[in-house]
Image (cartoon, one colour):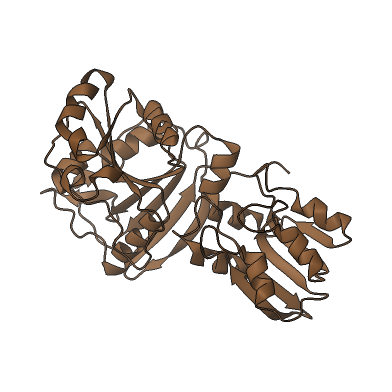
Length: 354
């Protein structure tokens, strides 16, 4: 299952809104075929693994998501496994899509052994945005990405933040962007850093992410996201009473101007645009607001091994919670990024109904 999950990640940025899926075919404990869902509209992982295996009769298929049972852009994987003579299927979690789910039942009726639940937590974390969209529709899955010093500061006392993190962490940040439908910043970060919010890393996303500015009351029309060649992939969220004025200032370049009073309303507006996952990259005030409102579902925290002492905090003050009452987030990943450390945590893991 670990191998299936690792294979699935190869589809990052290329398969959404489909899930990330990897499949491994085994016989007598030996791998005889493996593959992953590589491109939206292309072969699913199970079908690709069968194509890579000349004879799957009697094999076990290990896959991180229940094989689909419907005819979509590709034939149903459950039927392909049956036709190939696979004897046993081990899947981590159910498919939450009402149109696609039910593969496990199809396989059992055909006489195959089916096991569900192995590696379910890792599988749920891997496809969190996909599961969220199916189980809790209405707003995108929201992740915060912060890069700080050891003492939790985004910038030093002079406001300088480039670069707290090292080159490996910055490359990871661009890889991360490629897998989200939208990249968002607050107004202050947009003005101070004037970021492009584009993907410039090892993965070229199938669809360029939306750039989102949570502007509220003020908008500077000269920002890059409003004036570059990708302005048509930019959304600015403003208070309802200034929406028409802002639309006159930046709408001509193709920018989508949305009236949204409050974070929840802003997320609902993004959902209507097709945004199912949102990566927030700044700043501290926006991150604190999302955390305080219970609207942050994941945090990617990159820590550089430096102490700054005084500077711009990543997380501002919130209503206090006692240690006994504090809720532990689920740890998704911990590893090194060059000299820096990465911690990924989810507020809760989202599972489809069994």
